[in-house]
Length: 178
Image (cartoon, rainbow, N blue to C red; front, top):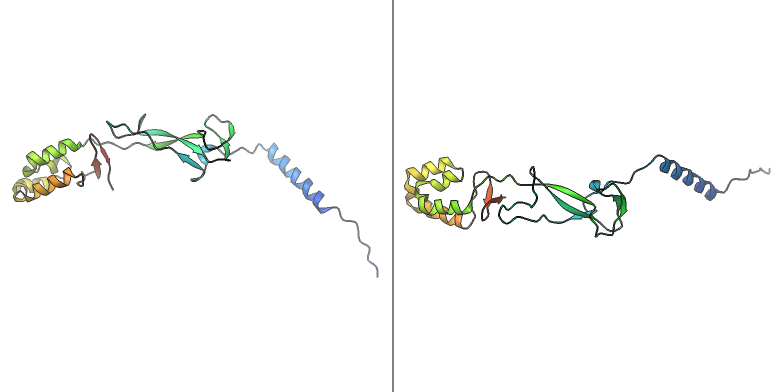
């Protein structure tokens, strides 16, 4: 028995037509390019913020937020901060990433060292750094007979000692501790 076969359309031509229709539908639907701010980690590189030496905070910090320039990786296409779809080479700024500024609490390294040196035996350094219970204990024991005052002075001078809010200070303002 001879079976008659119907001629089949060419599979590659049908696949090409289907892909063309799908592309046309997706283009007509207005499929937008990804915004640069929505790139995944590793698809962009942000510069480190410039730090103000006087405040130890990022420059241009307003409302507890600073912005650093970020560069999409080479051959990434996304919408930049102006809304333009751009193909990046790795040298153009794609967006500005907001980073939070520290909440500076005002502890000064120089004041803490001076209090520890001159009034450490009265516990003034511990009161200043936010440890009132230890300050009172140092006051009542005259700085743990001088030994506690000496240890506190060394720790504060070496910037090992933290204030109660877990900040380590720099020259004029604190920086986050561990």
